[in-house]
Image 1: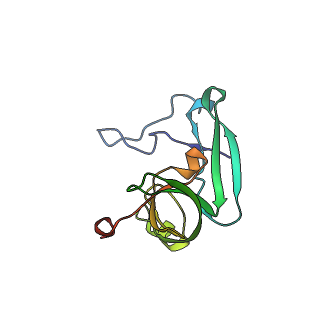
Image 2: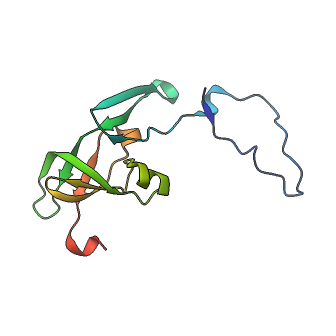
Length: 132
């Protein structure tokens, strides 16, 4: 089963229903979100438009964390997901998306990559004034 990202759910300006003028095409098909969580590393490869491949992170317990002061990047273990402002449900379930705050051995960090699209979890350490 696939997700279709179309505008058929919307109505016309007059208030009438929109009717499908043709069937769905393969290139209009979308995909389900990866919803990356904490756990043993697990990735999924999917074929995209034009034969491109996309790596989705389903589970992972490591992140590449960059210290903005020193400029050094280290692969560290993710201890827990602190919060996710993208979605209340993701916050509750501990789903890692771009912008999520994670706790690592180096300290609190904010995810800068898109794990469902990039295939990796990159993060930047948060300083004192950015935490608020």
